Image (cartoon, rainbow, N blue to C red):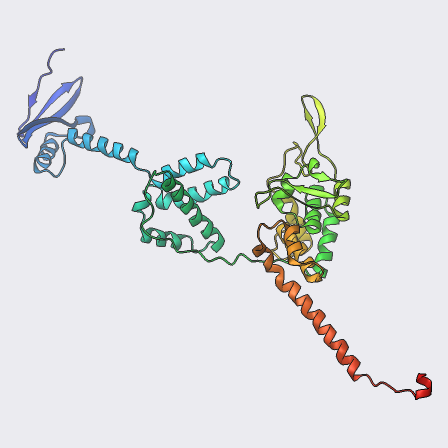
Length: 387
C-alpha cells in the first residue's frame, strides 16, 4: 500500500493527510524520551490545524495522556472493574443462588428501586456510614417495616458474599430499624354483621369464600392461594397447610363452617388436551391456576361493608378470628398459637391482653357476686321453722 502524502501546516508538529475528500490531522511530539505520533481528528469533525496544535501542547504539558496511554488506562480500569465484587455483582450471584426463595420477587423490586441506585457500583468495604444515612433520607416517607426489609436484604447480600469469600464485610454496623409490627385488627359486632352481609351479597364467589374461610379458620392469604382439594381431609376433619410461612407443613381443624364453605364452593373446570378436567386448586382463576392477588375481588366487599380504609380484607379477618378466640377466655395462648400456625409464641402474645381482659372481667364478676351476697338482707327463720 503506497504511503500517504503528509502535508505540513504552519503549526509545529502538526500535519494532515487527505483520505478521499477528507483532511485528517495528526500531531507528533517527544515526551519522556519517546517519539509519539497520533491522530488529532478529522476536518469534518471540526478539527483545524490550530485545534490540533492546542491538543499537542496539552499532551506535551501532561494535562492529557496520549491516546495509546489513555486506551491502556481505560483497558486496565475495565479489567480492574471486572474483578471488583460490587453490590450489583453480589446481588446477581445471590439472586441466582436463591431463585426458589419465596421472597425473591419482592427482593428484586427492593434491590432495583433502592439498593442499586445508591450502592450498586460499590464494593461492601467501600460503603460508608454516610451512604446509609443518605439512603435513610430517601426512604423517610416509607413505612418502618419496608425500610427494615430493604436493609435486611442489604445485609443478606453482603453476608452471602462474605461467607463465600467474594468480598470483605462492611466496616461498620448498620443501626437496627425499630418496627412496631404488632398491628392487631379487629371488628366490632356491628362491623362484622355488615361484612357478613356484604360477603353474602357479593357475586365474586372466590373472593367471598376466601373471606369466609379467613374468618372461620384464620388461614393466611398465601395459604389459601396454595390450597388444593387434596389438602382437605373431610374424613378426619383437618386442613393441611401446604408450605406455610413457618416453613414446616402443618394442619388445622376443619370446623363445620369451613366444611360448609368447601362443600358449596364450585370447582373450576378447565380444558386440557381437548378434555374437561377440574383444577387442583380450591381457589382458582378461570385458567385453573392459583391466585397470586385477590385485591380486586375483596376490596369491593370491604367497601360495601363500610370497613376502615386501612383494614386488610384477608389478614384483618385472620386477626379478627384470633381476637375473638382470645377474648372468649376459653382458648389458651398455646392452643391459639397452634391454630394460627405461629412458629413461635411471641407472635401469639399480641392477643394476650384480650385474654387477660376477659379473665379480669371474670374475676371482677366473681367479686361482685360475693359483694352482692354479703349485702343481701337475710331474714333468719325461727328455730322451729329451721327444723
